[in-house]
Image 1 (cartoon, rainbow, N blue to C red):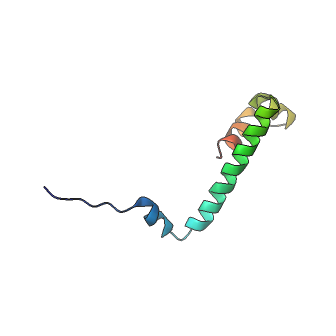
Image 2 (cartoon, rainbow, N blue to C red):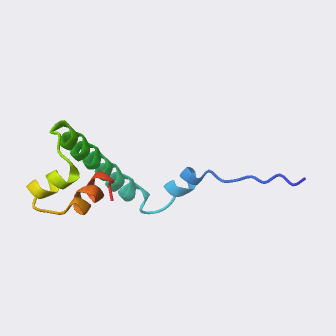
Image 3 (spheres, one colour):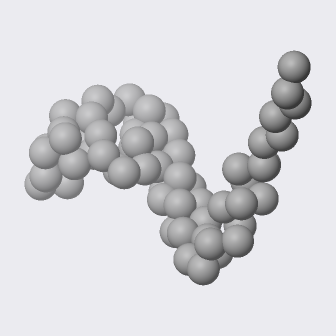
Amino acid sequence: MKTVSYKNPFTEAKKQPYYDTYFVDAKARIQVAEKVGSEREKKGLTMAGLAKLSHTTPAVISRIEHAQ
């Protein structure tokens, strides 16, 4: 039986030219998402309630909280 060796996808990803920029951006989005979600829940607000106070839609709040 032939042995197959796989490359580590994380090591391979780090070789890409924009890896550092993407990583910093993704980390920042995740931090904002966690902060918005936790503060919203602390205040007892729903996504719809926060959206109304922010003059936006619940879909926008959802995208923010899901780091999209």
